[in-house]
Length: 451
Image (cartoon, rainbow, N blue to C red; front, side, top):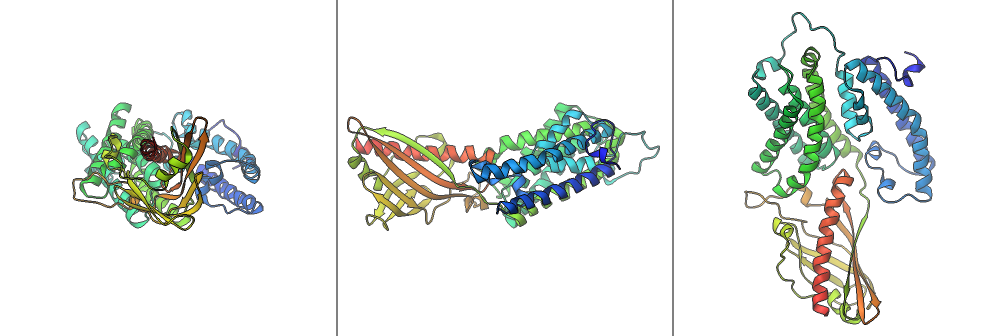
């Protein structure tokens, strides 16, 4: 080895040197980041590479300086990682554009593992040693497709149960790592005896996701609502994994040799990632959602219906009929700071102690208790998967009334909440949209009552 291994993009690189250099660079980078974080008085853990808290909210002052320092020191490591990966892709006979996976959180770890295990193309051995896959995987196209989809989906079912029941993590390992691994594994098994087309490899990966979803519903592990929400992300990642599997199985001798070790590595990597998230932990940012409406009534009239309101009519919106919780009425015990507001939802009751009572301008409250965010669709009488508790948490709320000309009022409702499901960039639009619709239902009811 020489120092040029860290910056040269030409030539090739064996899997042993790639594994060693990649591991050493990550260890050096992580400890450098920990040192920088300590200078700024911040903790730094491996999970921060997946969800840097400051980037999820805003960058200003100390946050901006902190992340600017991290980015500046990361540039040499990014160059070295890209150079090493390009040379390794060339040696493995894979397209160089796959270097883009170096920048995809979590997928880059799985891709690094794949490149560490994948041998370089070479002449087929005269008498390859048979593996358990020779006996397990049928040679026909339909049989190998069924084997790939079933093996991936059954393994996924066990890993989902491990992640949500034991580690109680709805995170990167479950929603990113597992679908990618399912697509990759199913494509490798499907193409074990003979190379298959890209479209059929992706189809088998999607079939594995569909079978896994059906098993989760039939075994009362999950309901339909959560699975439908997760499906777009899972299908995209399964297609990515299937495409990588397709590229590998297109080199039969190389794929046949590497498939058993690659499958075993993924089977161990996914629960390791889930355990890592569980051990390291993560802090969900406090996210605001604001919705406003204009009402043809003065603030003192609107205020009376903000503090408490009569029963709302049954919802017409289709999404509330899917089981998503919706407000039905509100009452209050007492008046002023220290009073307790009770907002009744279809799934239970929010208990909201009043923190600011500035009549008729501002009503602000914390959330002491809350019901489940939805009722899952299920063929059983009732199921209660862990994500119904302590994953979508309302922390605070307020109503702000602003007087407008002509005796009108702008009423703005705000909820501050935590979403502990990752990746946040995928799940936040879902939760923001649901909270906006809940706000809109309440605000429009107050508008009717005040007019």
